[in-house]
Image: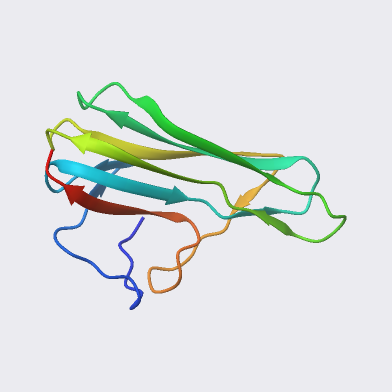
Length: 132
């Protein structure tokens, strides 16, 4: 995970902190979180499932939102899926309120990444939209 340097993405304020799969918010407030995955495969019955988990005690995580998308089998061509989720999260304490992103690819589906300087293929967008 890296913060995008793509010139089309604007940034305001401090960045999220990332450590060992866990994202920490730079300040309290109501946050909008968008997470998408681009996956691809050329076998039948593949799919990708994503979800965001949250904690309010810096320990126990619970699923907040989930999405799945099938990768259609069209013979021999590589085809794509793009599950995505959006939610709001009321961060009342930056020490204990955190999120992490998970993915489960079935039948050999592969994640399509992207560089920090290119368009978002797999990644997340955090936007603080107001006070808590």
